[in-house]
Amino acid sequence: MSLDNASMTVYGDSISGNCLKVKFVADRLGIPYDWVETSVLARETRTADFLALNPAGQVPTVTWPDGRVLAQSNAIMLLLAEGSDLIPDDPFDRALMYQWLFWEQYSHETALAVLRFKKHYLKLADHEIDPGLPLRCDAVLGLMEGHLAPRRYFVGEKLSLADSALVAYTRFAHQAGLSLPTHVAAWVRRVEHELEIEHLN
Image (tube, rainbow, N blue to C red; front, side, top):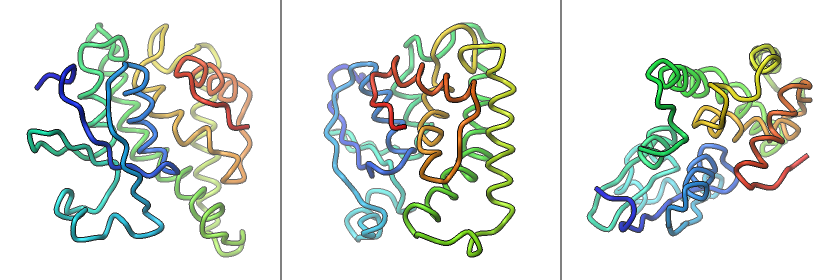
């Protein structure tokens, strides 16, 4: 399937880092798409029409005119970036990129995104939140800080999908009541600049 001549439709929620990842990559690579705002909070992902597209009821979900449907943000990013400079040529660097993509979904998103959702959208007080959750966020940011201290990007010497994925929720850290460590904050600004996205804080 050629992405150059197949206009895709992205069902996404603009407050979701997972959805914004797809937008960042498509915009960076000049891939055309139609964006259909699909609110999780308004339960628009639970309608019969949407569940017919994606029975898991999750965004982002991408469709093409030929009927193909793809979900899961990192799978979508990998498809869009195939053959681009966002995926390292070197096999080991490419494996490192995958390592960070898996870590982002398993450890990073499940900490930062969850705390942000509870504090910023559900408006829960600190005593209503599992005390282990902020500690997990601190550990995640600490790991990122240590990794970025001697380097500018997560993999190699230039922007990759690892950065595009990890910046999506990291740049919303203030909405989770978190402060970014020095090197992480500098990396966020660097990646936002390269992706030509607005700096939030």
